[in-house]
Length: 174
Image 1: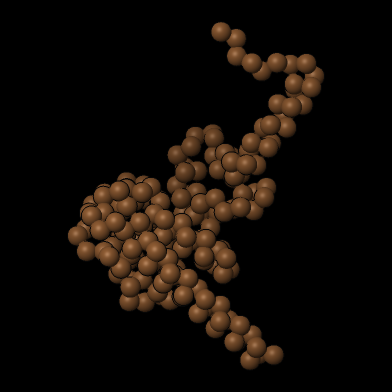
Image 2: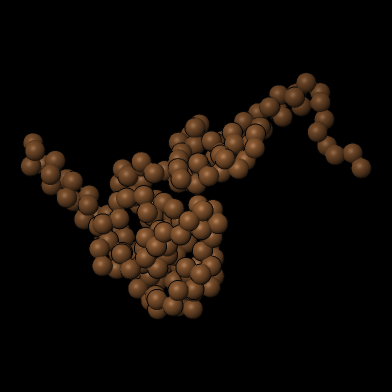
């Protein structure tokens, strides 16, 4: 029984590593020139208030290139997926797409400790670290961060439907 669990875990880790390598190739991470443009335009310093090299795009690309198994920590969940690095990359590295795929892969393989999910349907929303930053800046509207767009739409749509069935109109008057 223990042997089967160990084999299953090893198989899952190999599948995760293989998935990471496929994402790296698909999004051209291996084409990185180490020019530093991605680090220069990254807004993480403004958002988190400090520069930490290990959280930066270049560092993540370097670490993944040499040790893709070693990134089960929170480092990859700091990226804002804003697309700035991708836009300015002269090599065509699509880091934003890689990050989104990487996070999906991590969640699929049970690494959910750094992810924040919709309180209604359980869909992935954002990294927990980003949630914490947003909660401190959204004066009174932080509750909007706990549901995915579909659940918000369904909840608000149900209220509007209930009101419209009582004869209330919601058309704009011009």
